[in-house]
Each structure stands twice: as structure tokens, then as C-alpha cells.
Length: 328
Ligand SMILES: Cc1cc2nc3c(=O)[nH]c(=O)nc-3n(C[C@H](O)[C@H](O)[C@H](O)COP(=O)(O)O)c2cc1C
Image (tube, rainbow, N blue to C red):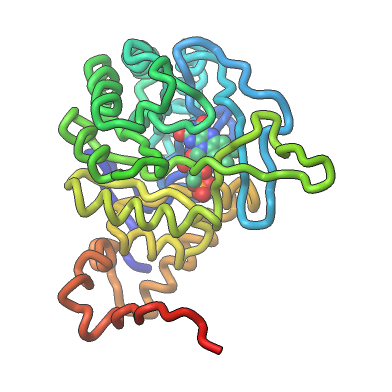
């Protein structure tokens, strides 16, 4: 088997698969199950300084190409979450699987408050979620929407903890590279790209949106091309490690994400659909893919997309033919 270990912000993972936030990781028991099932690291559900009830049902729908969800970040608040994280840490510590806490807030100070609270549980990393599409900040938009606000939230979280922070970005921005540069300059130790992309589903009979929140975040297979593009652009812009997240459900998806430059790979909707057993399957597929092609470790795959363009264009990939309107 090839060497699948990776390091993110000084934290070693035995393999690159990371349980994405909000899926499965809502209790210490479930985080432990994901760790035992083969995840290289596990991310807890996002918590906010105060408890949140979340949105009314229906909050999620499997529409055949992934999920559309608007949970509204239901959580017990950062203090209570810190107790859950401490229990999760106790359960998975011996397994050697890093634990990632996730925080969000609607004010800059809230990021510092939540970071300080979860740090008491000593997670290995803190993911700073500035990109939930279903929760507005006091700016009226996501912190991930502007370089200045993204940097402010990053600085606030970093000022309140000595634990390395990954900042989670949104695909719903004109220039994700500019946001990535801003958070890197503000001290982010890594980036998770991406959160869900806002979308809507409508019931034809009633003419009503299906989710009670009307809009929600697209995840799963429909998100993969968006995530690959974002990871590619972020990795071209910054040197800090990126957890490529969005639509990964097979070993080949993971290869694609790492080829776009990701150091590790988030897996969310695939776990919601197939349970934690997907980790072993994806790892097996990734390992077999590498063996069949003679790759011995992940750095050999990482960033191949960046190396291929633009000079390799004469040979591979072939130039994209100009689009012509259909004639006749
Ligand atoms: C039901 C659901 C709940 C989610 N909750 C969170 C959350 O609490 N915090 C967060 O940062 N991302 C959350 N996400 C986003 C995922 O972590 C991930 O970024 C996104 O779904 C793309 O990855 P995927 O296609 O593998 O699911 C949620 C996604 C889903 C589907």
C-alpha cells in the first residue's frame, strides 16, 4: 500500500480523508465511529458562541445529485460543545485520529469567544467557518464574502487560541483567490475549500420552495466541479495547506481533488448517503489507483493540474476546441 499520510498545519493524518463538518460529527460517539471507520481526521459540527435552534423543517433534501440543506447551524453553544469535544477527544485520542473543532459567529468578537471556548477541549485544529450560506452575520453577509471581513474573523479566532486554525471559504464569491490571500495574511494555518453553494429546489405542484428556509446549500456530486475550480484557484494563490471539500465520494474524486492541489480531502455528503463505511472504500480505491499507476505517496499526485498548465498544453491536456453554434 502507498504512503497515504499527510501533514496539515503541523498535525499528522494517517490518511487524507477528513470527515467534513456538520455531517455525522454531531456527538462524541459518532465522531469516534468515523475515526474507527478510517477517517484520517474528524471535524465536529460547527458551534456558535450561544446555542442556536436552527431552521424549521424541511431542512435537507436528497434531490438525486447530492443534498440541498439549510440546517441553520443548530448547536448547543460553544461552552457545551467544548464539553462534547473533550469527550470526543478522550474517545478518539488513543486512535491517533486528529479532532477538528468548528466555530462560527455573527460578530468578529464572537469568533474570538468561540475559539477560546473550544480551545479548552484541546482539539488538534480549529476550523473557522466564515462561509455558512444559511446564516447572515451582523454585516448582513457571510464573513467569507469580502477579503477584509474574512481577515477580521481570522485574526479574531487566531488571537484567542494557540491551536492552528483552518479557515473555511465559500464558493459564492467573485474572486476566491483574493479571500484566500487575505486569510493567509491574517494568520490562517490552512484553508478548507469549500462550504456549500446556495441553491433552491421548487415543488412544481405547489409552486413552493421545498426547504422551509427557501434556499439552501448544494453539496455532493453537483458541487464537485465548483470545488475543484476553487481548490485549484486557492492553491495557486497561497502556500498554506488546503482541505479540498465538495462532492468527494470515490477514490478517483480524491485523486482529482489532490491533483488540483489539496493536501487533504473533506468528505461530507457521501457519508450522509453511505455511512462511515465510505472511508474504507474511498481509501481502498485511492490506494489501488495509486498502486496501479506506480505512485508511492500523495505528494507525487498533489498539484498535477498546476504542473500541466499552461506549458504542457501542446501535449496534454489537449486544447479545448472553440465552441461553434450548431449548424443545420
Ligand atoms: C447537512 C449538512 C450540514 C452541514 N453543516 C455544516 C456545518 O455545520 N459547518 C460547516 O462548516 N459546514 C457544514 N456543511 C458543509 C460541509 O462540511 C461541506 O463543506 C459541504 O457539504 C461540501 O462537501 P460534500 O460535498 O462532501 O458534502 C454541511 C453540509 C451538509 C450537507
